Amino acid sequence: MSALTTVLRGVDFGEAPRWRDGLLWFSDFYRQGVFTLDSNGVKECRFSFDDRPSGLGWMPDGTLLVVAMTSRKILAVSPTGEIAEHADLSGFADGHCNDMVVAANGTAYVGNFGFDHESGADFKMARLARVDPDGTVHEAARDLMFPNGSVITADGRTLVVGETFGGRYTAFDINDDGSLTNRRIWAEVPGSTPDGCCLDEQGAIWMADFVGGQVARVLEGGEITTSFRVEGRAVACMLGGDDGRTLYVLQSPTADPDELSGQGLSSVAVVRVEVVGAGLP
Image (tube, rainbow, N blue to C red; front, side, top):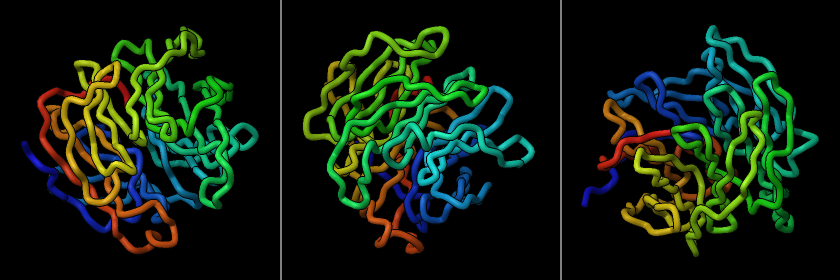
């Protein structure tokens, strides 16, 4: 079986890898920027922010949405580079905002920690936010155990949310107005810590298992068909490349800001897989 090959080092803490227009896009928390990586291994800083950027996604007109973690907002970057506030989640999120998936119509689903994780506060359940294309914020779901990486199926009808502290994936039907119904367990993955993820065309989820230090292909119901070890912790993954069969993996030795900020200890690795990517992100 193939192993991961590191293609980029010097990242502080990468998050939210996305494949678009022949490039891998990702956030770097502690360098406070959104970067791209091309097929030649060239990294470019596209946008900088006065906050930690996390989840990424695009609206139909090409506007890039970026989660600003600590201010608990979504920022909109126009196709010409202007940055504006898209939505304010500060009255909704009970912890830092984190990952996000954006539907084809521009509706965003955003997770948050639910509590002050970095200060060691007691665990609390979190709510998932739905942000309509006009920036209006709604509660999409509640009582989630650290909602993190999420995917939307290719038909746009199902959202699957990873619960990092629950070791599971939870699915919802997406209604025409973007609201969520028919909550159900999509997969139990005992002992895992689901982080960033992506979907393939057979309906399987590639899961970054942060504490487990692996990326794993999970079927609905919980069966793992393939897995790869990473360097340290597995933060997030994304299928891309010219044929959609290159799995990009963001890996880091830790999640501690004091150890990572300004140190460039994290990296991007790749491995070839058999099934092409599908759905969103």
